[in-house]
Image 1 (spheres, rainbow, N blue to C red):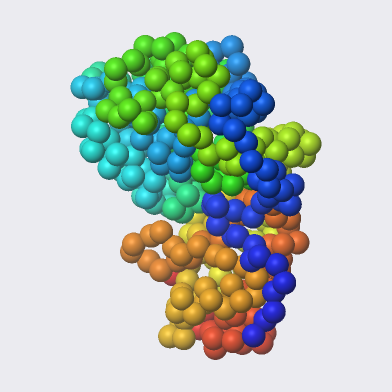
Image 2: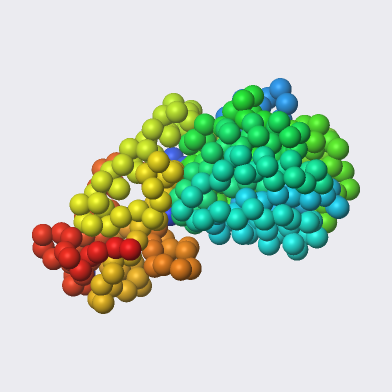
Length: 381
């Protein structure tokens, strides 16, 4: 058995491996009404808006809970009752938006796309032109179920031409892939603390157009998830309406400081791309191929075809890689067997080289792979 004297590195799309500084930020207690803590909240919100260059037009509303809480809050607050939403669907998180809209009682129009293909901006624009009752498009930027990157700049332009609202689930792309509201207009962008910002999970946030948020009073189905009410209360008091996750907030504040020290979006994105390259090149040498074509692959998480071998079993594979110091993610697809490996978090390309080594050693121990690496039995779909 392999002795690992540290926490396993998380090769997941969040929670993810965080720096020691981020962990240490959580060693102190904070009063939720204290002026010092409220100042930190305000600083975090300002910095998040600045990442998309939205200070002139947009505001940030943080919300307790996972990213999905904020997705539901954004849809429930910014989409009026009786409105209709177009949802391009090429994966599990797009499907989740459809489920949320159904529960909220908002009409949804699904525009299905194959899971290994990005959205077609022209098809989205055609759907909007064909149905003037559609008021919003709800878009997943990086579909974490597969790792595919959808073409946000072109879609934002198409939606703007048709004068509809755009709500972006940027959970796995925000802060690593460029999103500039000045050239990619949107009503709202949703992300979370425990993704590419490399904080810990526990806060989602919505960067919303100030005028759209101001006009959304009374839309929400919920007290706790009413972004308008949360925003108004914070403007008046500088405080959260209900008990905030104080340790998560200060960890995010510290993570943002490191984000700026690293060089911001351009440099963080470059590190993730280098991580992704080290991973995919190493896995190719093992005969393990990505599900998504390289030109559509986001440098966030990579879905790999599972080995087509009688000795392969995901749980055995997962445990073997974990014992060697790394935690992977199961596949999210239903029709073919896959597994996923994340490229984000406080990781370097050398860490991903070690991940590939651990995967190779595990597969060899399972009898799936020989000492030379990939074998004929490693053929993939």
